[in-house]
Length: 408
Image 1 (cartoon, helix red, strand yellow):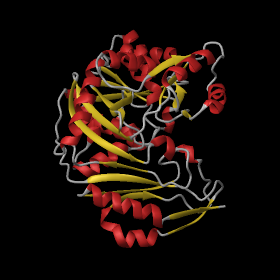
Image 2: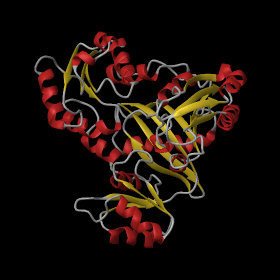
Image 3: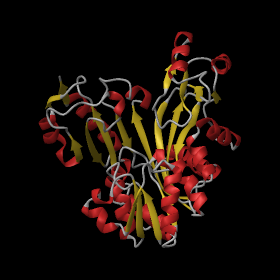
């Protein structure tokens, strides 16, 4: 099996996909944006060939690199795992005649209005939504649905670029911020769904889900990415196989996989549950970000990177999740933008919960801070596990109350 992998360097866990491919017996070629000389010793050992391009999102450059590789060896798979790479690589894959995620599937997993149109037609409950390219279309949707609404880029990931509008005064500024009324610009607008937010992640082989995981956000993402004082968490449950409350989430996710034509691929799906019941939010046809697979591995005594490689190369899983631990991450925000001046509470947390701590990241004093919107791993963070999800949540709450990241 010869696999061409897109961009081996960034983010850092890209190396784990390449290592896993090599360890299950694949011949691995990579295409990336840096020079061959910049590859570290591990990548040089795992890769049999490397091609440099100006941008891995430039379909023409990548296609030329793939054609060159194909002229010297048969290519069985062309794989990408980063959201921004999925659509251009799907187009290259089809142009080069390589099996894998189709352009249709990549488009539907990226374009929110088109995605939800297909899913609603297939019976998947979604928020009311539409695409809008003019202020008049935005106003017409709000008149029909009412406030609050969410405006966001059609191809945005997570809360990136999303704006909540609670009333008429906020509608025009939000529309302008997203480029409404500009030539060729279209955005997604949808009703705001009240309720708890989580995600459901899968690994599928030939359209069948072989691994699945459910995770909860505390608080919901839009609030977490806008509010400095909150130390947001996400917690991966170990109850997905035994708690019947997850059956509806699993059934919804499997239906989404079917309707969007996902074959052998990882997925990351967002959902809400509240007064209107369970609602699908969006999907990425790739692994979750924020190194979530590391949490699944720690909680389940497994290696999902290897499972992904087994799916790609051998069409079968090789491990079963133990569901031994719930695992979670808490983001620790600096007191203000600037530079890190110190920490408090870390020793107390280490003494109280040391055996349950998976790992942590505390940027050195003097490091520049990152904005709140940079995400869960933008600044300091800590990851933990425990057999009881309730106890894990209690410990993470204590971490958020105890640990302070000071900046000036």
